[in-house]
Amino acid sequence: PICPDGGREAWLCVAGCAALYFCSYGWLNSIGVTQEYYRRVPLSSLPATTVSWIGALETFFLPFCSPFVGILFDRMGPTIPLLIGMFLHVFGLMMLSLSTKYYQIILTQGVCSAIGMSFVFNPAATSVSMWFQRRRPLANAIAASGAPIGGIIFPIIANRLIPTLGFGWTMRVSAFVILALMLFALATVKIPTKPVPKSFNRAIAKRALQPAFLSLVTSFFLFSFGAFLPLIYITEIAVKGGLSVGMSQYLVCILNAGGLVGRMSSGLLGQPLGMFNVSAVVAMLCSIILLAIWIPATGTAGAIVFAVAFGFAFNFVVAATAVLVSQVSEFQELGLRVGIVWGTSSIGAIAGILVGSSLITGNDYVRLKIFSGV
Image (cartoon, rainbow, N blue to C red; front, side):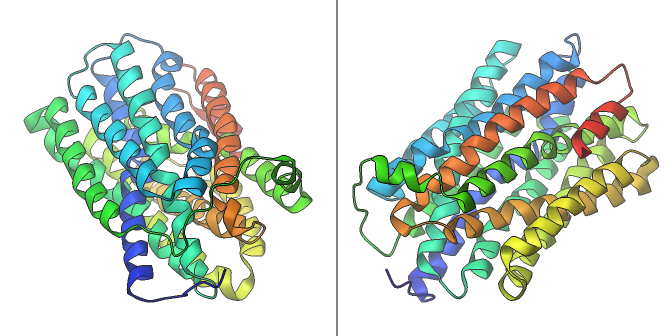
């Protein structure tokens, strides 16, 4: 089908998808703040590997459910997945605000809210590409910029409200912010063509084995194996390294500020230079940053330099995903294809987080950093 490549509805869809990125990956990008809080206050008696399951499950379920959400999106459009996602995400955070025990936090944040985010994220990653052809990289970059903005706002909310209102009300305020943005997205995120129900048959399965698509799936699986560890541990490592809790939490904001530049750069550079070419270079840069900057980084200055550099590179690659998938996929299968890429990467993400957390010994995180970079 011919893409409108602009117009009022198309740009409203971009705005709505930015809100969806804010509510899904924006929340996930700020996971380091809650992870550090759990390790310091309510779950301080538990080992690091046990506490890491909260972030690991959240990082796993968000992309893991994406193939199933993609099939639903291809058959019914974005509205039904968004309604399901809004309920699960907001309900999970409201129940998290009442949680005091480990298993309660696992169920509310690690499972319920995370599955809800998956239903929110897939339409955000898929809808914009259906409205644009020539401007697709730029439009997707603008929409994806909602994630680092959320990653800036949520840590500020936590840093300001937890000391005054407590953890429970901080989660409720965050849930209300997400609810308001989800309602806006429901009114604006549409697709230009009517969904065509399509069963998963051998032809679709055969196309999923195309070399270009398989190499994309493999690349994101390997990238996810180590790339999510800094999101979870950047705050905790900074606190253990001597930074104040407040400054350590603001590192998440700084990381996402770098991520905002990275996501916008993916749209500006991907079109003239080729999205596959630029993404491959930046993914290699991401590994170099982890090994050359994160390992020797000490003090506030080193932590800030790493946060900005890694935030830029990580978010550049993540923002490029939807465009890369759209370049090797048919429109009618775009939701499923995006889902397969992210669903596969979820296995790498949870495995990497659990392996990385097992490498922590006391206050020594060097082995975790080496694993993440390699």
